Length: 150
Figure 1: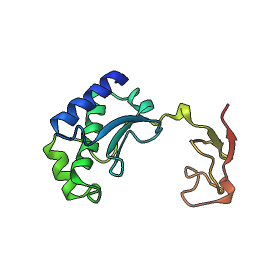
Figure 2: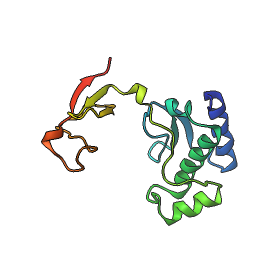
Figure 3: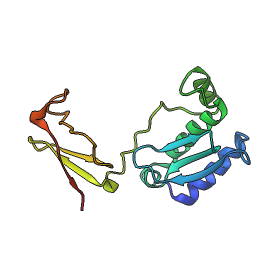
């Protein structure tokens, strides 16, 4: 598990190595499903305070490299060839996503389908949702009933 002080120091180190310090800033955010984000408007890279507590130091380093590659590649690069080339050059070894379990303990809504499957959501859905485990297509026979998590 990566502690906050280590994450900040690792971000500073990697920003210096890849020469983006002073131009880009680092911060923690409150994301519950994504681990990192690169914001070209504010020139900031953030990582989830909650998910870094669940991640290993190697996973956090890889996420930081992923986001630094976005910073270096530019706002239009997405996960295309330019980004992939830069990511590989700076030592990123992963794919487009992380494997850290979302922070389900922070979810505010729990849903149940008629078959008993439980679904956790961070926001209450604005329209009816049916259970995808029971039927991959929307099916009113498997409507999910939502309740606020206590």
